[in-house]
Every structure is written in structure tokens, then in C-alpha cells.
Image (cartoon, rainbow, N blue to C red; front, side):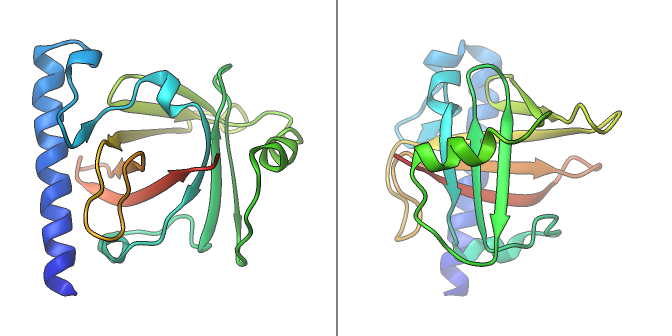
Length: 168
């Protein structure tokens, strides 16, 4: 199992590195490899659920410790999330209803292979996430269409990995 975790991390690192290099050489829509790449803004929009995967143990911090999490990226730039200690199979309608109660939710700014998250309720709050949309299955955990979000620490290294699957 440990070898599988290292292989998976190596694969993600290589994929993300190549996408960073490709981004600087070409436009977003020409950047995708056969394994995936940065999502388009349209691909990012919608509702997502966190997926448990073994390499998540590589996280150096866990600022969001609840095991079940849901997220939404809205067309108008809202970025909503919720966490729970129990699992549920929410529909997009149910998630939209829950997220509609947020008066001033965080906002996201789409930057191609990165998104910037700000919170209007917290002055100076900003997170920069790397984003990668998988174009094929990888092992038994990552499925085509899954979204990997990586949060960088102050030193620039990845401190948190989040694997999400689209809620349809």
C-alpha cells in the first residue's frame, strides 16, 4: 500500500509539473495532456464531494478535519463548502439549498491552473489552490473527471491535497 501511495504522489507531481510548464508555453485549452490538466472555468463550476484516498495521509496539515465535505463553484464567483462527520448522498438541488443560506460566502477567482479563494468577511484572507482535472482513471481511487486541488504553504510546497468528485 505504501508503494502505491508513493507512485500516486509521484504521478501527480509529474502531471502538475508538466502542466505548469505547458501553461507557460500555450493557452489553457491547448494545455491538457492525455492524463488531464487544468480544468476550464466551465468544468470547475458545479458541486463536488471530497473523496477519501490513501495519499491524503501525505497532507502536512489538515485545516478541514471533517471526513465528509461538499463544495460548490458558482458562475457568479461564489465558493461554498460544508463539512460533516457523517456521510450523505446530497443532490445538487439539496446542496444548492444549503449553500443559499450563506449571506457572504467566500469567492473564487479562476486563474487557469490555479484558483484564488478570498473571504469578504475576513480582511486579507486568501488561499491559492492548484487545480487539475483528471482525464482518465488512475489506480483504484482516482476516476476520470475527478478534481485534485493542492494548497501551497508559505514556502511554496504543497501542504494539503483535496480530491473531489463531481456531484451530478
